[in-house]
Length: 152
Image (cartoon, rainbow, N blue to C red; front, side, top):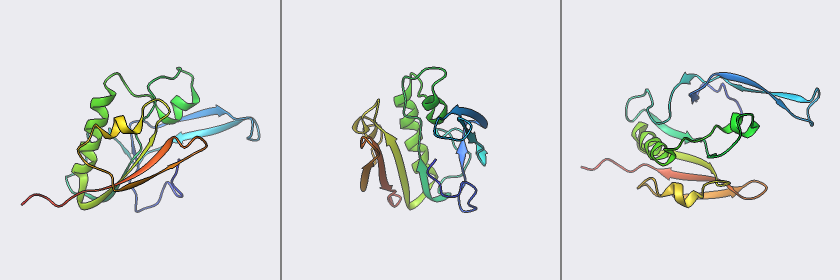
Protein backbone atom coordinates (compact mmCIF):
# COMPACT_ATOMS: atom_id res chain seq x y z
CA UNK A 1 0.00 0.00 0.00
CA UNK A 2 2.92 2.36 0.59
CA UNK A 3 4.96 1.80 -2.58
CA UNK A 4 5.10 4.65 -5.08
CA UNK A 5 5.54 2.11 -7.88
CA UNK A 6 4.69 -1.52 -7.05
CA UNK A 7 6.43 -2.67 -10.23
CA UNK A 8 9.71 -0.81 -9.57
CA UNK A 9 12.46 -3.05 -10.99
CA UNK A 10 14.64 -2.46 -7.90
CA UNK A 11 12.11 -4.19 -5.65
CA UNK A 12 10.84 -7.75 -5.23
CA UNK A 13 7.32 -7.88 -3.83
CA UNK A 14 6.55 -11.11 -1.98
CA UNK A 15 3.25 -12.25 -0.50
CA UNK A 16 1.40 -15.48 0.22
CA UNK A 17 -1.56 -14.52 -1.91
CA UNK A 18 -2.42 -13.56 -5.43
CA UNK A 19 -5.97 -12.23 -5.32
CA UNK A 20 -8.29 -9.34 -6.11
CA UNK A 21 -11.11 -7.96 -3.95
CA UNK A 22 -13.88 -5.47 -4.62
CA UNK A 23 -14.25 -3.29 -1.52
CA UNK A 24 -17.17 -1.01 -0.77
CA UNK A 25 -15.94 2.56 -0.74
CA UNK A 26 -18.45 5.41 -0.63
CA UNK A 27 -15.74 7.93 -1.54
CA UNK A 28 -15.03 6.20 -4.88
CA UNK A 29 -17.04 6.64 -8.06
CA UNK A 30 -19.27 3.59 -8.35
CA UNK A 31 -19.04 2.88 -4.62
CA UNK A 32 -16.29 0.23 -4.92
CA UNK A 33 -12.55 0.09 -5.27
CA UNK A 34 -10.33 -2.76 -6.28
CA UNK A 35 -7.71 -4.23 -3.94
CA UNK A 36 -5.15 -6.23 -5.92
CA UNK A 37 -2.37 -8.48 -4.60
CA UNK A 38 -0.08 -9.51 -7.42
CA UNK A 39 3.34 -10.29 -5.92
CA UNK A 40 6.47 -10.95 -7.93
CA UNK A 41 7.08 -14.01 -5.75
CA UNK A 42 4.50 -16.12 -3.92
CA UNK A 43 6.21 -16.75 -0.60
CA UNK A 44 5.94 -16.89 3.15
CA UNK A 45 7.80 -14.21 5.10
CA UNK A 46 8.81 -16.92 7.59
CA UNK A 47 10.61 -18.98 4.91
CA UNK A 48 11.86 -16.87 2.02
CA UNK A 49 13.19 -18.54 -1.15
CA UNK A 50 16.39 -16.45 -1.25
CA UNK A 51 19.98 -17.23 -0.23
CA UNK A 52 21.39 -15.65 2.92
CA UNK A 53 22.77 -12.15 2.39
CA UNK A 54 20.77 -11.43 -0.79
CA UNK A 55 19.35 -7.97 -0.03
CA UNK A 56 20.64 -4.60 1.17
CA UNK A 57 17.13 -3.53 2.16
CA UNK A 58 14.13 -5.54 3.35
CA UNK A 59 10.70 -4.13 4.24
CA UNK A 60 8.65 -6.28 6.62
CA UNK A 61 4.96 -5.40 6.74
CA UNK A 62 3.42 -8.51 8.31
CA UNK A 63 -0.23 -9.04 9.24
CA UNK A 64 -1.03 -7.18 12.46
CA UNK A 65 -4.62 -8.19 13.22
CA UNK A 66 -5.54 -10.98 15.63
CA UNK A 67 -9.29 -10.48 15.41
CA UNK A 68 -11.40 -9.46 12.45
CA UNK A 69 -14.48 -10.84 10.78
CA UNK A 70 -14.43 -13.07 7.70
CA UNK A 71 -15.82 -10.24 5.53
CA UNK A 72 -13.70 -7.51 7.09
CA UNK A 73 -12.05 -5.21 4.52
CA UNK A 74 -9.21 -4.68 7.01
CA UNK A 75 -8.75 -8.45 7.14
CA UNK A 76 -8.60 -8.62 3.35
CA UNK A 77 -6.18 -5.71 3.17
CA UNK A 78 -3.85 -6.60 6.05
CA UNK A 79 -4.61 -10.29 6.76
CA UNK A 80 -5.03 -11.88 10.16
CA UNK A 81 -2.36 -13.46 12.35
CA UNK A 82 -2.82 -17.06 13.45
CA UNK A 83 -2.90 -18.48 16.96
CA UNK A 84 0.91 -18.92 16.86
CA UNK A 85 1.49 -15.28 15.89
CA UNK A 86 4.43 -14.85 18.28
CA UNK A 87 6.27 -17.78 16.68
CA UNK A 88 5.34 -16.50 13.21
CA UNK A 89 6.68 -13.00 13.85
CA UNK A 90 9.80 -14.36 15.58
CA UNK A 91 10.48 -16.53 12.51
CA UNK A 92 9.74 -13.58 10.20
CA UNK A 93 12.27 -11.34 11.91
CA UNK A 94 14.86 -14.11 11.83
CA UNK A 95 14.26 -14.73 8.14
CA UNK A 96 14.50 -11.04 7.27
CA UNK A 97 17.85 -10.74 9.01
CA UNK A 98 19.02 -13.95 7.31
CA UNK A 99 18.40 -12.58 3.80
CA UNK A 100 19.95 -9.19 4.61
CA UNK A 101 23.56 -8.46 3.73
CA UNK A 102 25.85 -7.37 6.58
CA UNK A 103 25.00 -3.76 7.45
CA UNK A 104 21.75 -4.16 5.50
CA UNK A 105 18.62 -2.28 6.56
CA UNK A 106 15.31 -3.71 7.72
CA UNK A 107 12.30 -1.39 7.65
CA UNK A 108 9.55 -2.79 9.87
CA UNK A 109 5.97 -1.50 9.66
CA UNK A 110 3.54 -2.27 12.46
CA UNK A 111 0.11 -1.05 13.54
CA UNK A 112 -0.46 -1.55 17.25
CA UNK A 113 -4.24 -1.36 17.20
CA UNK A 114 -4.45 -4.92 18.60
CA UNK A 115 -0.87 -5.79 19.66
CA UNK A 116 1.56 -3.28 21.17
CA UNK A 117 4.77 -2.69 19.23
CA UNK A 118 6.76 -3.28 22.44
CA UNK A 119 5.36 -6.83 22.59
CA UNK A 120 6.38 -7.48 18.97
CA UNK A 121 9.88 -6.07 19.45
CA UNK A 122 10.35 -8.58 22.26
CA UNK A 123 10.26 -11.31 19.59
CA UNK A 124 13.69 -10.39 18.18
CA UNK A 125 17.07 -9.83 19.79
CA UNK A 126 17.77 -7.09 17.24
CA UNK A 127 17.19 -3.51 18.35
CA UNK A 128 15.82 -0.75 16.12
CA UNK A 129 17.98 2.29 15.43
CA UNK A 130 15.05 4.70 15.21
CA UNK A 131 11.42 4.89 14.25
CA UNK A 132 8.37 7.03 13.72
CA UNK A 133 4.70 6.90 14.68
CA UNK A 134 2.13 8.04 12.17
CA UNK A 135 -1.52 7.81 11.22
CA UNK A 136 -4.65 9.43 12.61
CA UNK A 137 -4.23 7.72 15.97
CA UNK A 138 -0.41 7.42 15.89
CA UNK A 139 -0.69 3.61 16.13
CA UNK A 140 1.31 2.87 12.98
CA UNK A 141 5.05 2.52 13.52
CA UNK A 142 7.92 2.53 11.03
CA UNK A 143 11.08 1.16 12.64
CA UNK A 144 14.57 0.94 11.14
CA UNK A 145 17.05 -1.82 12.00
CA UNK A 146 20.58 -2.34 10.70
CA UNK A 147 22.11 -5.80 10.55
CA UNK A 148 25.53 -6.07 12.14
CA UNK A 149 28.71 -7.56 10.71
CA UNK A 150 29.13 -11.33 11.03
CA UNK A 151 31.03 -12.50 14.10
CA UNK A 152 34.65 -13.29 13.33
